[in-house]
Image (cartoon, rainbow, N blue to C red; front, side):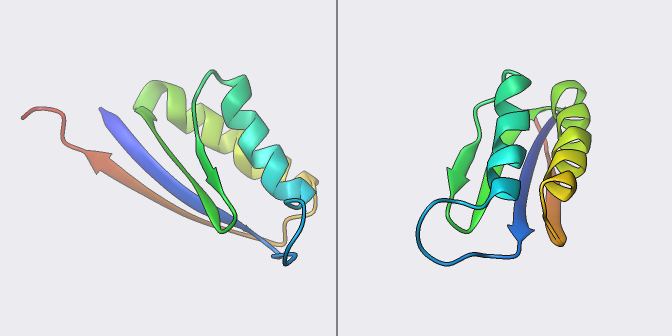
Amino acid sequence: MMLRAEFTTEPFEGEGEPPAHALAARDCLLAAGLDPDFGPLGTAITADRERLLPALAEVLDKALASGASRITLQVTAEDDRV
């Protein structure tokens, strides 16, 4: 099953370099061999369930450890049986 996850980490820090918690979240996905769409207001990623769910657990842990005060996460199951 394919999943699409979209998340934001807070606090936002305006213009300039992304905050450490956003970079930590992105780096977890990269370390898992995934290719996230990293942007100034959030990150999106599509991958199979077996790869994405463990990576998201790591994202939550590392982002919080790096200063995130809130993480908003949405996960959508994509029907690949078409």
